[in-house]
Image 1 (cartoon, helix red, strand yellow):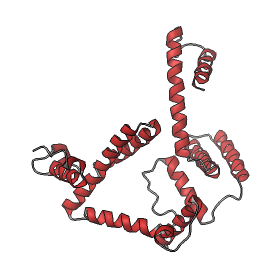
Image 2: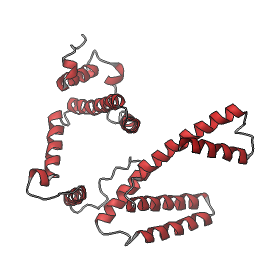
Image 3: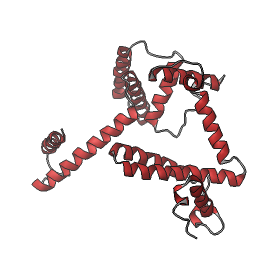
Image 4: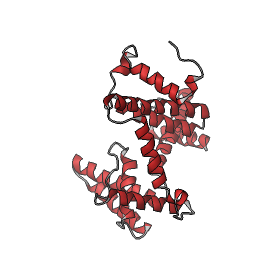
Length: 259
């Protein structure tokens, strides 16, 4: 039976829909899912939310947030069926974490700027980790560039940091030199990784999110390249065979059109 429209706008109604999908007469696809099989969809939905935010389209963002919420609730449904934990446990855990990590709101602590809040947050998380490594809890599934910045933020918080940004620039020059001098595929891979890691450190000094910066660069390149393709088609230029100078001229023209 189709749920009534009122219940479809309520959290409890959504939970009943998901339980039905997992039930004996539910959806064959939903019934066979596990926490492991759902992993790729979490990453995909999170990525689509980022794209929706960048598009500035509220309707698209609403839709993508709903898709991610479905994934979250499906994981909760699986856990409840297995007797692992309940939605109440999830909500209580989140509520306790938010209250405990905001003592400047729910307690007597003082943090009057975003920077002070971040410093307090990092200190609280450090105390929660106890004797664990400062790097404990950083997800390995993070995109590598984002993970490198997360690692470097952690080590900076425990005092393992460059003294000034000039030292980071010097290290970058050094690592690029080592990359140029690498002679085997393994050496090149290692040295390229070191260059990217230092670049992430430089981004941190500049207060730039490296993952966002690279995503933005990819978007700009795609837009310009698609203009190059259009210009090439209009002028009968073969991008596979024509002279490099011709291609570069098209690139500069496409770049100027986007500015």
